[in-house]
Length: 199
Image (cartoon, rainbow, N blue to C red; front, side):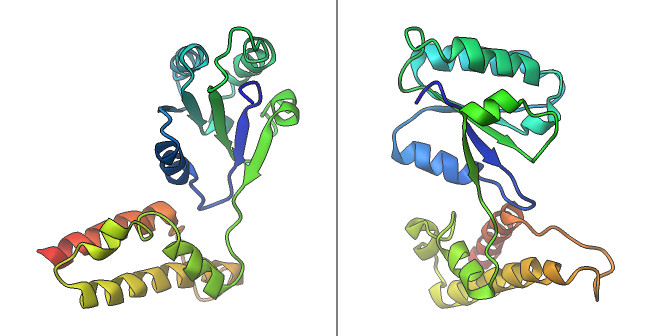
């Protein structure tokens, strides 16, 4: 409901924003997002007020970084959003946060918690990539002048991504510096690869 915040509990390398934006687009919902940090509290509060009034979705990212704003967010969730007479039923408040001791317990108790754990085996990790953005977008996948080369290169990059992600489970053995090759890195790499292939 509009009174319950939806909380993405993040794990290393996960970024639910692109999936959320695609879901909002498919649902024909307007989304406004704020990456919390220094000085973003009043902006976030303004979007929450407008979203509750007009019925669009608000995403507050990185709540674990907004220690000074979290008490105010708790107050907003406990008073303003629970008043169903003044809150549009289409409004949704989405929050993203790493597990943190400073996150308000009342928001966790009243909210819907969502987590996105990475797959534990190689094959399921590769299948998950092919079901995610931008690979599952038919236009991105098929609109190329060199389809055979593009499919092979894309498979190679996705394979490499899964290999790097799975390799982390072995710890520092054989790796001097651990690198977090996350989903955003893969998206950017795929777009760059396609751009270079089309040149």
